[in-house]
Length: 382
Image (cartoon, rainbow, N blue to C red; front, top):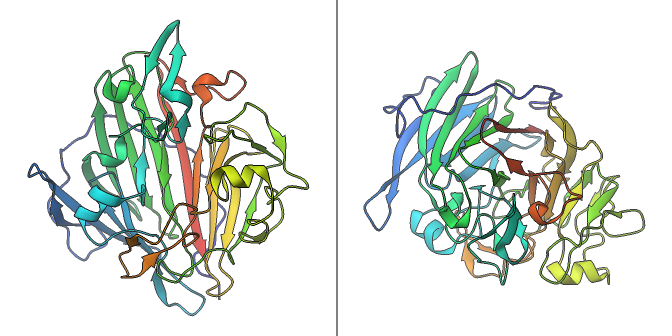
């Protein structure tokens, strides 16, 4: 039985960058509108809210802290629901322990080598939080900030608009960056993310979402039996610090060839130097389609046991596939089970890692008067 299957060809919508209200609207009731509830408080007393949305057979819970997807529930082939996103049950765990579970990532998703880049003749030193490198925006990236949230309904769609302004110099990045991220659940059950940002000074931007997927259910164990395809014939090899070398290497004959469906675990233990660096797969695929104006299909993930299938379409030129290598059995998830290596995977649509230091990579520079826009759509079926 097919559930919520459709082809996604929707274009990136034009969006404004000023919140109509701060912190969202009043509580909604069971009429299809997002429902707001208190999730917890930070140490300084700041309230963090949870927003629950449901549409087209998909159920989504989002936190104002980090724009985090706390849960995403979809049915299997028999109509049985499960949360397919790894996460925690408490705000305290997200603050103290989270390896970016479900979070909005910025200002720069992925790594920047040595936490430095030069733009227009000036060198900027960023927050370093991954060895000698800067990862996911630094020690206090977008994932650790409280966002203003505004719920909306538009025709048969429901969603949330998340707003945040980052000051010039935050985590070392130049420019005051005004960011708007829109989460939409469509009537087909698709989860669409539209990113938009403007700056008052030349800067670099690379926003993404860091959901850890397990289509069998977040507490079900390994994702090594999931089947994955990626529409990419090249990837970007990395050095021992997981910084791209600048090469675009071909995938044929390597563990990085997912042009045809194969299980995640099929080649993950192959003796390949790139797999040693990341203790598995933690690399960027250069998508064959490149940078596009409209979202195009680039990856399919399927769990044979449940029949659940995720299809991803994006405007972005790259996909970071991370196979959950650093989950080490020390984290207890929202379902009450311990997360071990390979219990979830990430498929992060984005520009390439370290692009500010790699002239041959697609540019991530944003200048005053320009608007950064990118769209990713997640479609579910069983």
